[in-house]
Image (tube, rainbow, N blue to C red; front, side):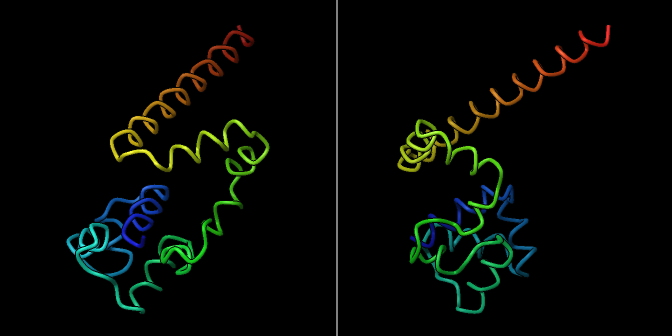
Length: 127
């Protein structure tokens, strides 16, 4: 549970293993070992990881289902109001790593497409 959640929350926060390692004053190899389940962080390191990732130790350990800080973000608020998005994101949590990466890439593609549409319409209005 810890290994999966650590990797998931690290990626959600946009951090590389190296970046997280720097924040908690350890090595990329140590982070990799935690994420692959080859080793378990000490209690002190677990607290440091939770702080660096702006989450709780309870979330990392699987004692609670939701990252307490996810509910505070705007995107999570919008998802809460859309049952179809809620279902899609819940289903995506069971995806393989490759499928999850593809889903994220597709979402990023759509985001860029929407951003480009916004720029075109605002440029057209100024002409």
